[in-house]
Image (cartoon, rainbow, N blue to C red; front, side, top):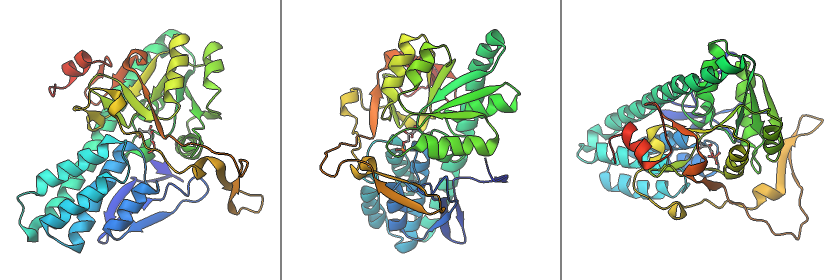
Length: 358
Ligand code: MRU
């Protein structure tokens, strides 16, 4: 998708290094950063210079390429992989990508490791782009159906950033929106700010603006009243891990939005590539919920009137706070899962019909 009219992907390999868009600097600064070492890639994931489940997975795969550059030895790759899977615990794409890379490399000669790894990352990224594009085309059918009845602007609420910045391109939740817009369907997006890190305001609104899609940022608590007023036609969110039961783990606050949608008969869809499905875990209480530094709540960063980016404390110094990064939306509140293969019920049966894994 575009930034200032120029097409980008979120991650690529150039001149022997990995390049990323540093998402901690958006929206006020657009900085392309080089990841030169394995540790650079791990830190980029930990510090959320790259974030969003599919992009975390792709970065992890590139991290293995960088590890091979440092030492083309299978034992080293294995040790590096262990370090990598702990960088962020909730998004299943990280483990998925690390396993896929390790499987691919397990019987490769040391001198071929680098080329084979780089080719596999390319495949992971291209596959993600295709999957996200298909999610968009499948989700477009739902938007079109609502539009054919309403014949007026479709208001879509989204949470966090499940946009192209969270993937390689297109996004998951945003892909149906981009496709609808390209088809001439009038869409408007309610963008949940998404405290504490404001991925909605800083990233989703930013990327929608760059594509010319009308959007309005709302605080995380505003969705409920908008739904009561009939000003939300549907919700589409992404996910960091969806169980084969259809239970959805996503950015903190998603659950409350799903409850409000349920109470107001607003369809609540979750868009995801199959790489985000956790086929093993059956009980959502077993999903590791990332707890991040409480400073992310108590400090806020922004641009002052002299155009300087600064960080200020907004909480009382003595107050305690807790920063859980994700929550669970039980399957019963999910209208449907929009996948690369089609739309299915958020249930074991629904996923069984869509994928042959179960
Ligand atoms: O903590 P983040 O910014 O990595 O969380 C991202 C989300 O919760 C997204 O909604 C999710 O990863 C889906 S990305 C297509």
